[in-house]
Image (cartoon, rainbow, N blue to C red; front, side):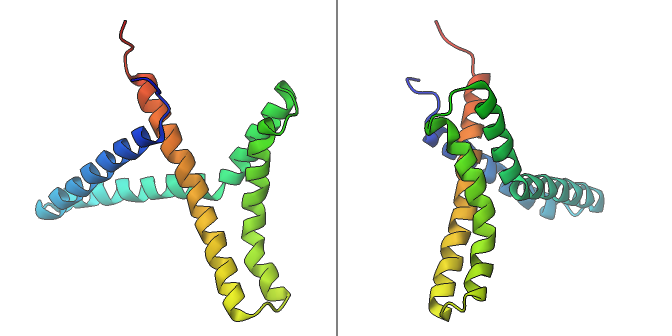
Length: 144
């Protein structure tokens, strides 16, 4: 593999993961066992809460990373990327409220809310795919 951190690696692995989880869900519903159903339900709730935690506090992780980079490396624009992403995520939470306070027309408020939602979903998804491909390929044994 020439470039290990390619975005497609994360997409392919997460596609496999989603397919496997979907197949497992079908098997759980077809099993007719209440115990298996309750165990799967508990696992799904735990997974959902973990994902929700990382999504809601993702801006804190970005700001924490920015603080560490700020202390240990130079103060270039590229090293401040996580700072800008963290501050942008915080700002995106307040943009729809600010649009309401400024009495922006309804069509423009819907557009602003849609753009904010797209960015709030895109950035964590992109980093999740990148990190999953990075973790997968760090586990892969190197060939000589």
